[in-house]
Image 1: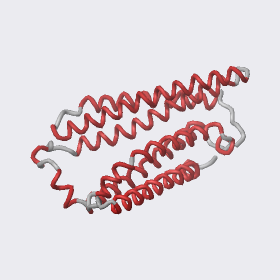
Image 2: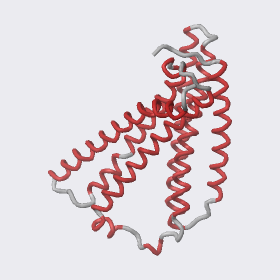
Image 3: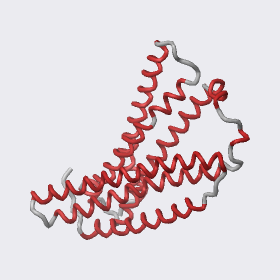
Length: 252
């Protein structure tokens, strides 16, 4: 049997390379935009921070989608599925390698934010609110925000996997033209789920911004995290069952 660590590295390498490409494109975009800003005479010490914050969302969204695509390809690619490893471990390593790559991207973004913020501190500090207005405990909101981000990512990926695997299993019993119709329905469902979750994230970020400064109780979000964990576990069990019983591989 293949070791889980070896499978983790194999699956993670492609995802890691994709995210590095997104980071490189982000840096190029920041550099080009910064040069153009300097040419127009509007460059200052805080410009790099503002540009990094502005450009970071696009590679995050694109990178997140690329990770989702890579995750789903692994479930039907004979390159991976023919590896001698139990399906539960295969599913876990595929999902965890995507999550680890996402964490790596978030760490890189945090470093970029911190570095550009430090460079522009003398300019940015004058626009920050007095520290007295900030809640005394900002550590817990930050921890919860990170956990919500990671759990949301896992929930989106596990839900997409569930829809994808159900479609793959069902399409084996349908003629070609009905498979196409089913795929259209699946795409609509996935888009709907993505939009709904994106709305949840936007509202969650706004909520966190408020409670960070007001010191609001976070009990409801801990409960939401627990509920998300239960959904992820249930979907994971269903996904593993589908992988074991119904989903066939496709030639790469």
